[in-house]
Image (cartoon, rainbow, N blue to C red; front, side, top):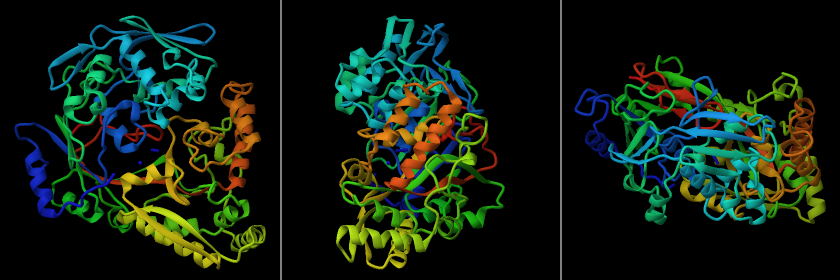
Length: 545
């Protein structure tokens, strides 16, 4: 989910850090062309099996490559696989892994990448004990043989339908044909991993530059847990898709949590790419360096149904927020109000129309309806008032949005008191995943272009069903549409998934807030960055400066 305590750098500290990194004030220095990117959060690891959060996946997408690569046109291309042959019944794909692919550590050639490394990566990714819940579900959703049984029923991970028959040949077997499975198999959880190296590193694997074997277009050269910067250098020996297209030698990520400090660093010429929020977007909207793009991501309030089990209470909350005001007066970044779980521009309804254009809107502002639901909830619960815990993070933007939501609920629904529970950014998702929260803001971005990228998350018992919501009819529809009778019937499937969304939204276990837009300042000499609607948002493989 697309989830870190961060230091706020003073201006003096920032300038000192960037000078030592070879920042953009001297782009033609010994290290050649350098691009420096400001981030509010840097990852605590770069282990592909745990790459469930956006901050991790951005780096892993650079230093690791996989079977497939999603190009600038959002088309899936072969990457470290030189050939892929699908069986006539669509139940298996045989990949050829070329003999010219190697790992690189500090720039020197390491072990050869073989089909066995992909097999090992798949076992790590599907192991429910050893992997990140977001990552192991990719193979389940792709219909890979035994993936669901391993995750749900405890089958041995060695039974996953991903097998090397020799060093050059990898076979993936499937239980059902999923039209978008190549997108799922492009995830970096299937990036090759050398078993001997991973086991030698043990728990330290992926936590520093010394505990990483790079298989991708960039070499991770400076990284340590808790560091306020990460440096990658181009891998001149990389031979995957679009190899050698970038002309940038070094990319440095620097951690600056405060948005005004980050903007100041950009204005001073110390960083080249910076995210904008709030009034910053309005100020810089006409700047030649301004970049705005939409994402297949929805930010919503996840409500813990174990804590707040009354349906009418949750429905009251869902009708009490002015989401238009949130977008137009608070966020100011081009995000649009969300009255849905499946976002615009993600996929079709099976008939060629955008999924959203032929279905309903949910949870629109209606204070009279909200009050009616609240009165019903009070009668059912035998109360006159209630205090709800709202888990938020301590960073500036999160607190601003959290306080705004608190005010909206308390003004619209007298008797409902909102208690803001503040935790560090790095801790919040631990609380949410453990069910130790009342409700909280969560952003979920699609890994692939299909409604199930969102709807599958709330099947009963699903590892990332953080609301602990359950509905038998909903579960059956999702099963029919993923591994059952409607998996390949696009028209029937589209209608069924629209019905599933309706059931889900009526349960109000989540309260959608907005569909995300991202606004950046990117120096005008920089081009070739691919901004993806789904999956990894930022792709620097073709970047030039």
